[in-house]
Image (tube, rainbow over all chains, first blue to last red; front, side, top):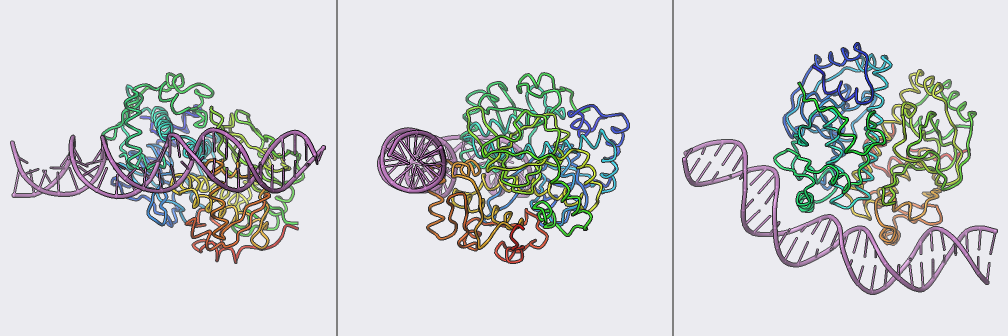
Length: 255
Length: 255
DNA sequence: CGTACTTTTGACTTAGTTCAACTCTAGTGG
DNA sequence: CCACTAGAGTTGAACTAAGTCAAAAGTACG
């Protein structure tokens, strides 16, 4: 079995067998279960350990004083919560389980050991860079694109990220999120999100229902979004358009 | 002389003399001058070296296909362009000089040496974490706050960051940016930015003109913004409100 | 003093928000 | 198996924030 983390890291370049073994070891650490909606880490906490989402979906979010909420990142299966959090005094945001999920706590020594393996270290640092790049892309998305295009961009990104970890079958993937959460991700009101989703559906680009997303026409979606995948730094896809990139991405189903 | 970088890093905790010496050495590396408006690194470039802004202001920005532009980060004097870029194949955004600025190229070996000094490594990693946290804060700002509050938040952040590197005197600091660039930072149109700035001025919170910002009433600005400084992870200011934090921040002028 | 940028202003349009009601669905317990 | 409930999605109408267009007024500079 190849873990989702291994698969994600290999998207940045192949890893030696020994490194893969180290990765597969990770899932043996202390594991915790969280229910959908539960907070994994709260703003103000001192994290201490690095967290890895083994199964399920989580998100980072920030809450304003008036209660408004912004989702600032998604943690898909196999994504580290953060590589360097262990030097942090206090979390500046919270992490919440979106679906039921199981999370492994990795002690800092293990992380440091991983960083001593050159190929692995490089892949992990890439992870950090990609996380940052994704945040920049989100800023651009929120700052510059109107609702429809913004949503389209959001779906393009999720599609590609899910594809990389082998979770897309026939343009469809599970994404256990409701419209209010989508709204909180793209900085739109629930109502306007709903209406814009309808437009995208009517155009035949994406369908979104029951926590499941179906990309009906990726080329169209990509065009609406003005999507360029370069910020995800996937080795095989650099400089290519999303639709062609996707043909090259692995289509394996998690086994 | 204490460099801006040293001052910034010490905001996360004191550094040993030897580490400070290493930091002061940095400015002896190959130095390049850029004029205001010039690109330092362009999207698609392979950076190779780490860049340090010694003097002047730069920004990271992304450009959409239709020409719209979003500024996603500011590089104030003494801020690294990025700690790990050297593993990157191709930049996913551009960096541009906002004012005339002088930038030092630091070879990857030097960076690796720095990372071997524990206190310095910790400070540099903090830098990365803070950069990320700032991106998340911007997403929240763009996604959830209406124009006026969003601008207020932007100014609060810049004020505090400038204060940390000792560039604020009497609530005033140089910030050589025009309104179009402010607009591109907060995701608003130029006209609406202008009108919102006027409101903030009329309320007696901030004045912005000739590349110079004067915070007239920080408590008010902070209130309008709903600003919490925790995401900047400044050691002395954790958990405190901005106004009190600022009393404790150094008031030294760059020597 | 003329040219080129930047800021300011007003009038108008549009995208997005809010409120409120209604529908649909899945789940629960009688 | 049905009725009831809670949550999620959908819709319409009224309102408001923000965008666009266009022109004027500053300001900076050679």
